[in-house]
Amino acid sequence: MINDQMKSLSHSLRLFGVHASFAARANQAAADGLNHLEFLRLVLEDEAINRKERVAKAMTTRAKFRSASDLEDWDQTFDRGLTKAKLRDLASHGFVLSNENLLILGKTGEGKTHLAVALGRRLCAENISTLFLPVNFLFEEVQAAKASGKYLAYVKRLSNVRALILDDFGLRNYTHEEASVLVDLLEDRHRKGSVIVTSQADPRGWTKLFEDPLIAEAIVNRLEHPSQRLNLKGGSYREKLQNLPKGLEAQKLLS
Image (cartoon, helix red, strand yellow):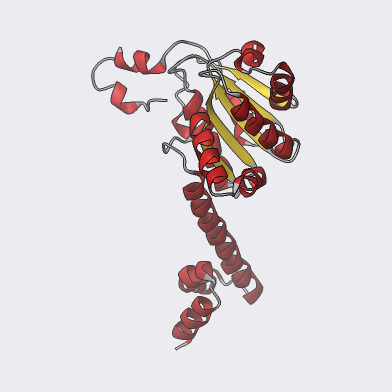
């Protein structure tokens, strides 16, 4: 009778963590001789964990990651310029809490996107809003927003995301209109959130991607200050996996 009442009450109050765990916690309390406050603490902790996991799941869906890469998948058997200590530091997302940008640089196949997605998924797990956007797709979305008269709302939405991942920046030169979009976006986000950028291009050459040198300087300045820079190395990880003995490559994830 009490179990049925608890199920009904916890569900109607949307306490889904309590709903799922109270029976097991009640048995634990009886077996371990826990008092009422200890039992209450346990079920409230279960509720907090459940809510965090539900928010994380929703954020991960909205982030639109292009893969399910996780930091635990990062292969440390190859030296790619990322130490275990630095990986732990990035996983603690201090750069996001400090509103710093993160520039992930390297050649094709060295793991830039893998790392950016893995960091983004970790941020979502900590309930930090994140969005993954290939740069070319960003401009396609901007065109659609402008056509529907919702450009300012679109920029504001991106500005409200705590961590914005811009993938494959610098693959080509950008038009004046595209440069203006980047200025609007980066100016609105400056020191309010973090931008994680993946790029094959050296930042010293980024200003050459834009027609107007003043706009170029503004964009590069907003990306580099403040920021952390991570230079991956070691050549294509995909090629290294292909050269492993048959069967061994299946145990490692492509970046």
